[in-house]
Length: 154
Image 1 (cartoon, one colour):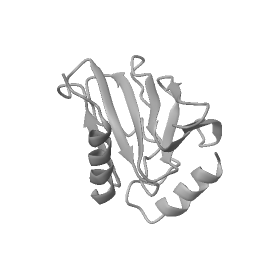
Image 2 (cartoon, helix red, strand yellow):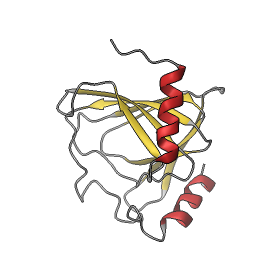
Image 3 (tube, helix red, strand yellow):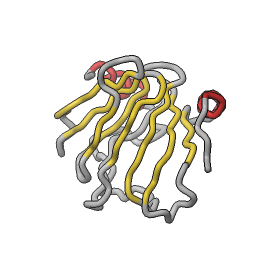
Image 4 (cartoon, rainbow, N blue to C red):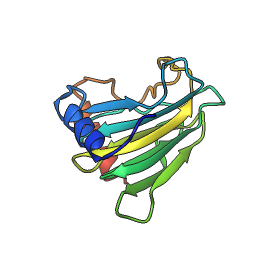
């Protein structure tokens, strides 16, 4: 049995703060080939998750906020925002379910943000077709301005 307590959350946030990507997963599922992926995702405000979609029809994705604040955005094929949600651990909206095939991203809106994520396994790296072609690649010079624009769209 894995216990999820405040110590685990604090350690996960600490790892995220010192990770170059400013986020850190804590997998609850035993391995990448597991049929159900369940994990905690700690994410700092300057972390960037490139918009993407999961083309496997079984890979709907669910996020539930555990700590902090998280923005979730949906996009159409051209990159226009088609929906958004503001998840706040102290607020009214605590989670979202994102259908497979829909471009989406999440942005941390507070230091120490952690959310629970669930989707079908196994883990497979994103294909080029699943990455949003209109969004900057991880590590590119355009990420800072793009991340700022995402936060403004919430």
